Image (tube, rainbow, N blue to C red; front, top):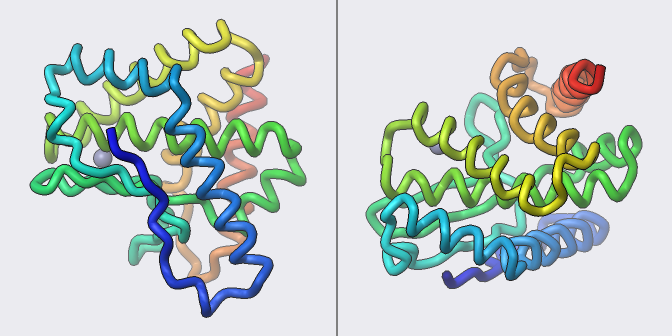
Amino acid sequence: MRISVDHEKLENFSQNHVKFYLKYSSFVFKALKKPSFQKFLRWMLKKEKIEAQIVRAVQVKVLPFRRKNGNGVAGKCNTARGRIRIYPKTIKFCQIFKQKFGRNNLLAYAGNRARAALIHELLHLKYAEDEKTVRELAQDYFCTFTQKQCSQSARSLFIYTMIFNTKISGKKAPSNGSNAPRTKLMLNETCLRASGFFR
Ligand SMILES: [Zn+2]
């Protein structure tokens, strides 16, 4: 599986932002290339009977991508070309996350969000437009992977909850035109859900 970082034009961004997003993308690149994860993906592709060759390229994008409704996108798949793109969270989101949950949880979240996104997009190569099936399977596979890594540590449960509930709450969050309060709202919702999970 060929994975590369797609360096976009960053000239309109402040030095701080450029530094942040470059660091983020190289971290995600390493998380996706990790031998244990690559081994897992080979197993998953085999199990799903997805030919490894149809995955032409996996691009780690440096800049985040938003839909017109303001929701952030974790990944995209061009099924005809077999090309997958993985997008980061925004700097704003990461700053709030870091303040609330600390640097180590942010790193674990960012790496695993990208892994979950890649699993999801790979499944689209087989299930195309069947979003429901892709979501269910992606959740199961991601769960299998994290359980293999560290058997049910508090952090992996936390990260799992964050990744899959953030997406759901992100859909429900009202769009008010400004990104900052929405990010906070999403984090608060996630936080409540995550703490409920530990009870
Ligand atoms: Zn999808």
